[in-house]
Length: 240
Length: 295
Image 1 (cartoon, each protein chain N blue to C red):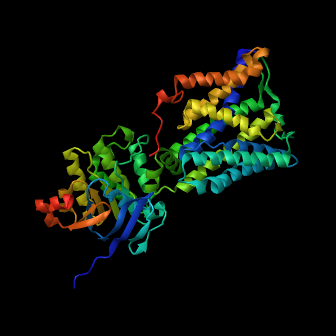
Image 2 (image 1 turned 180 degrees about the vertical axis):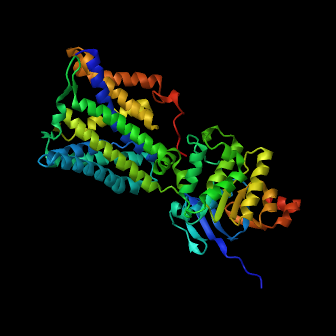
Image 3 (image 1 turned 90 degrees about the horizontal axis):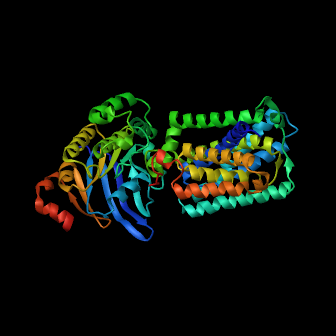
């Protein structure tokens, strides 16, 4: 009998409002441990807000979010991070005035597992050699691609069980985009659960075990990797 | 008074104002808040020196630190933390409210006439005689100013908590998303601000031993102006601004003719207006990054 993987993240009927404006209207999805799940949709669909709600950075006005079976609604962000959730935010949000190494050290702040830091640094340095080589440089001097790699490396140093990525390939040169996707594949092979928000629908659908399409705060479709090659299905996903 | 003596006095007063500016800049860094209640911490410390004047000096100093740090942390916990996430103007008004409320408390408890606080008055004695007269308090102000600024700089650059404080100052939300315990970081900024206020209270009472309810307010307002002139978004520029205005105040006091001395503050603020017209982002803005916007 096939063993059903334990759900790492369960979102049920999540609602988020910015003032009176609803941003997420009853989203339900689940991500099993070790799975990679995509979240695609047009701008303003509620994708980033869903990730921020998981992080506790915006309050849920309704619904439930569970991480490995425990509710994390109304839990302070720093506690969610320490329980094993890390976010690579849209726009990278690198600390420009700090060095690359200091940015990486900030990734360790949310790490609850004190062992294996050096081994993880080795692994991450192998994933993103450019980050390792630039350790002493001021982060504000890095290129867009280098900043994105630093943002992912910083999140990985927290040793997350669930990695949330918000538009990791946005605004990057094609060669860097390949590097980022290769790194994501390696991170996934390592057993890290991934919830990925992206604009590049076809790549995301092909990469993820399942991809949800979000539109106006609601999930409108669920796609599998098989759908990545189905142009009509992809067009339907975006334009209904 | 010769020019060299005037410069030394200016350096000492500048160091005192710089200490006030450090406290203001640290809190501004992590909260984007000008804490007008910082002056009341200095007043509280000065009154504590009055109340403990019969105790051994060490006990008096320890109590002064405890009062300033305790009050600083209490203000953050009771007045500012419940307003976390409120509009900046709301928190700014709260700092005024706290400052005026505490000033009323000093008025009721101690009256308007002033209370002597002179446990450290021996520091007024001359340490070095000669063409330049150096009082102990002048030397200690210089050493304390340099030492505490250097210590704060080392703390911020070399420790994990300091790194988290710098991260929270640059981008509060991202710092939280990385797991930085922002409440702890903010509390610690208030602890340091309280400690700085205690040092200022002790050194300022040596020069001005009569403590009134507005004792700390005046020095804080001038230090704040200096911090803004320097650039309040960065520790070193705010401190340099605080130092510069203290230095200018002291030197003007010495070089202005007697008939003009009552306009000393007006001259200082005229300089401030000219500087802000020429460099609205701060006197030292061209020497570093542009001011940080909180995201």
